[in-house]
Length: 281
Image (cartoon, rainbow, N blue to C red):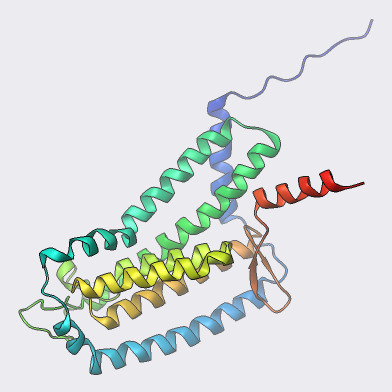
């Protein structure tokens, strides 16, 4: 008489949630495996060097020739009519951006833990891309905070006058945390990350980043050189995180010349396969 075996019980929801969370974190620190990662690393180093050199030259030029003039032309700090600008500028605050992205990642993990097969794979593919955007901002913001502390540049009019050369290194307070602009760092890191994944959004995202940059100037929160430095830190930081993901085959592919390109999204790729199957003879 044949012996029938019952299927193994499926792990419970808490075990599934733990497995999803552990897998999402483990993929970020696994050993790089892409065969073209050396070419991509050289290209990243070259582009970062050129951007940093050009950005540093522009920052110095602005300090010497334009910072003091520009901040004296802006409306007085606290002008009541600037309230829309004060609301708009918060859309570039790294704490808010990271909170929203972190919340989305948590929700995605809870939902994915209850799914199986293709549905889970599609959701986890989106999760990998959200991880990239989150880390692009987080890493760039961390570097910016270190630079702020080391440089210790006073914000406009700290000390009572428009002095672009008011530096107190390692001072550590908000009054001496002007360079680079944290809002601009976060906005440009977000703009680069989203554009790297979905190139069609590039114009929209960098328009958003430039608007955030301008709000920091209008509110007299930063000198022009601060926001240029912020744009540089945010862009280079996101570029480095993109390389980290590409070297591990997460969300990106590396071409023969070292160029990093986005992989087709899990959702869009699935829809294309369904469409091809439906139209096949």
